Picture 1: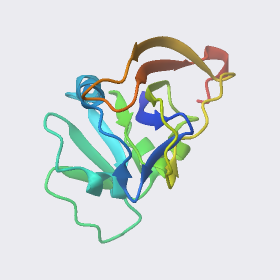
Picture 2: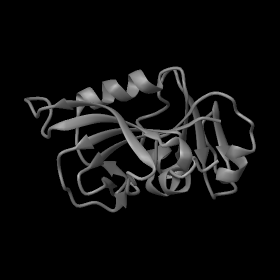
Picture 3: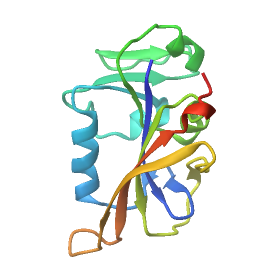
Picture 4: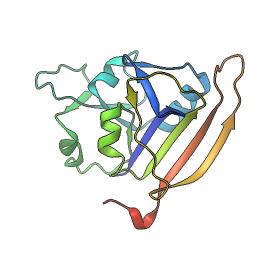
Amino acid sequence: MELILAAAVAANGALGKNNQLLWHLPNDFKHFKQLTMGQTLLMGRKTFESLPGLLPGRVHWVISRQTNYKAPEGVRVFADLNEVLATNYDAPLYVIGGGEIYRQTIDLADTLEITQVDATPEADVFFPKIDTNVWHLDWEEKHPADEKHQHSYTFKRYLKIKNNKAR
């Protein structure tokens, strides 16, 4: 199973506050859609519930500790990450949050697709530190702030350094 973590992360590691995003970056939404269209998304229950609904063209997998959690039709619910890993799923799996799910999967991941947002907002959820002894910056594309984007941001792709593969 190929794990790809996708996240928009502030300079201080912030992801969100009160189960909400900290910024509105339309080009990041487009980038995320391009990356994940036709793919399977893995997320925690709170992240799933923060979405405006099912994201079209994508399969939704949700991890929830709530044994009686009722997800909408078409959403696959797992009790924990071990149950996900036991599926023998052979396509890429995009991990999209939240903070706890990122912490559980970063050492297992193959790729990080990060939008680095040039801001340091107050937050209650953070992305794990990206260890440059484990991750190599493979690609980046910088974007300035403009009338639609309050903050400058950089799309970054990190690949796991081969000799540090955790699996």
